[in-house]
Length: 95
Image (cartoon, rainbow, N blue to C red; front, side):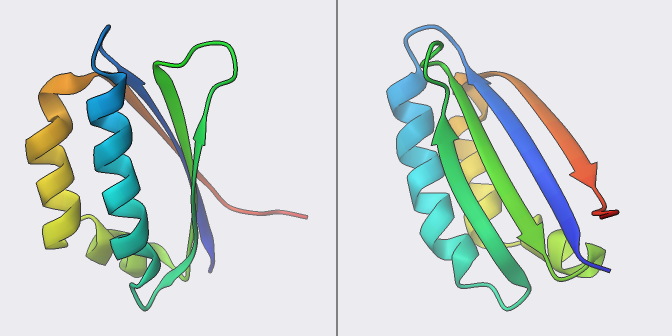
């Protein structure tokens, strides 16, 4: 079953440029993964510290694979301290 994930990432004050650069690198590498159907980065219009990644994966195994890739682990290691909050919303399309 296709899985959609909405990830909302909030950068610490003054750290948004670091987070954006890390996320941009993550986008290109993640889109190349076999199970990735969508991986789109957005920035909040009013709060520039907030980023939203809308992801769609072939199934939960593809998402698990993604979360264990070198590029995902690199993002967490290099940008983790720059993040204030991360909220993940896994969704299943029903209509």
